[in-house]
Image (tube, rainbow, N blue to C red; front, side):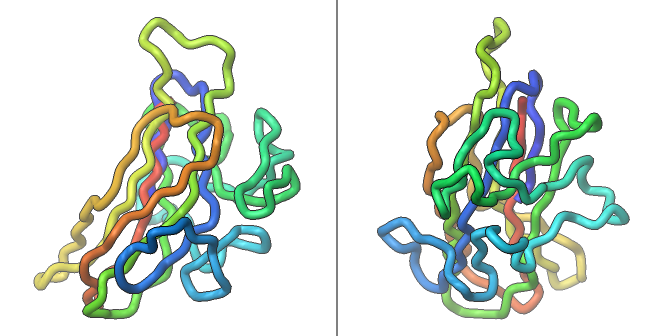
Length: 193
């Protein structure tokens, strides 16, 4: 996932309950299970990680946080409680318009089956005012990172959503058609605030 901060820094984007399912995307919303790649973030990041500083691909990180620690108290999706945990972009002095944060899964095993990435997300407007250009809270995107035949890294976007979506948790899915040996799934969250 890649997060990119918007132009007016008025909100937050959050993720919860990531689930990886081989085959077609389920028709009903999924909750993360105790399997590799799935995560509720209640205990830790379950093998999902921020990009290493040496990669120099982003400016900020994703933070595991509780609803009590956000600018406006909120509940997580898993537990429906302010004490529950989810991932959000780091709130720090370095967060500026256009700042980006990658959040990556572990390497995925090869499969001829498609892979469905399901997750819950929130775009939250935290300020009572909006400038004359309107809210610009960012975007959330899902990418597949893979190596081509020559060993070059390729990033393929497979899903993207922009801007304010309301204060509720929203369900989203992205289908990866085929996983080759060198594919690594990444979800890109771009916050344009």
